Image 1 (cartoon, rainbow, N blue to C red):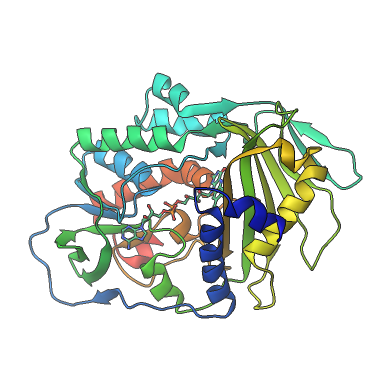
Image 2: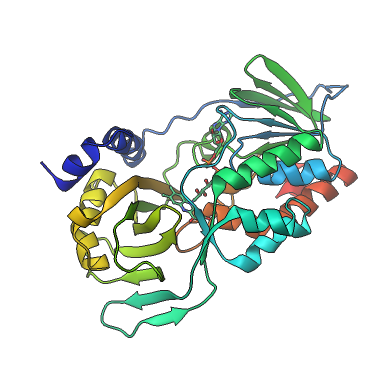
Length: 370
Ligand SMILES: Cc1cc2nc3c(=O)[nH]c(=O)nc-3n(C[C@H](O)[C@H](O)[C@H](O)COP(=O)(O)OP(=O)(O)OC[C@H]3O[C@@H](n4cnc5c(N)ncnc54)[C@H](O)[C@@H]3O)c2cc1C
């Protein structure tokens, strides 16, 4: 039995099953088995009466923009296939960047403090035998996604936003004067559709026409208790040579539930590239050396893993009028760890103001949105 099988299989949260499910998606991507749904069509007929201004599909980062636009007085409907809520694991970001939530009137200073689950200093940057560099106030804040998204959901609803949970986006037809969206039983006619359905958005799959990403960033990690040292973090730390064509780099953050450690690597999507389960095994093999800890000492709270496709053509410009991708679906990412929450927060003012101007001026053609 591998370390991964031994440690993940005994958990009640189906960590091994979920890891293998994610691996099936990663394998399909490597093998170029990427479905290209046909969910967006175009019509030259006018829609006439519209029942809302904006439809946002996807509620994770979509609610950030949804709450901001609803506060400005636009009528926003948000469609989420599950329940709109944040994940247990914190998002790491820098404090200054969070001011946006106050500037956009999305959170009060007190609510922003409540959204901050952890704060630490300093953080290390280090490569192999070179001297470590220590920095302060960079990605040293852990935001609680559960609290943040719950607060934004409340603000959105209080401002009159319409939330459709357990509702799956199915298709959209772009007309000269609006876009008609079918989601579950609902048919909504809006001026603008914002796609916040993540990396595997059906709209993006259609637009990318089954092309493979030029690169992928793999991440595996955990949040665990039992580390003797948990006051500092690592922004980027690398201590191994290239292994199997991969340069591993690590991040570590003090967390609400212990300490989060991630191992990342960049690769292309060649079918020969290793599985997520292989990387998890590498993570568990190297974690004791990295954090000077025995695995038996650790009480794992959760395992974390994923892969971020990275296309040269990012942020993607869709070939349709009236549809704007944001967040992971757009390919809006941070350069090192692909932290898409941070990237979205950095662009939230610009996206809010841009959408507001476009709606006011009725400049919603693809050249305007690009
Ligand atoms: C292990 C790990 C650690 C990370 N850590 C950080 C970090 O510290 N800092 C940071 O900035 N970022 C981090 N990220 C990245 C961050 O989590 C993502 O960038 C962010 O979740 C992207 O949000 P999104 O809303 O664009 O996409 P998603 O999170 O993929 O959300 C898409 C939403 O759309 C909904 N949806 C999908 N299809 C449909 C449909 N057909 N109809 C209706 N709804 C639909 C989904 O249910 C979901 O709610 C991390 C990611 C991982 C995997």
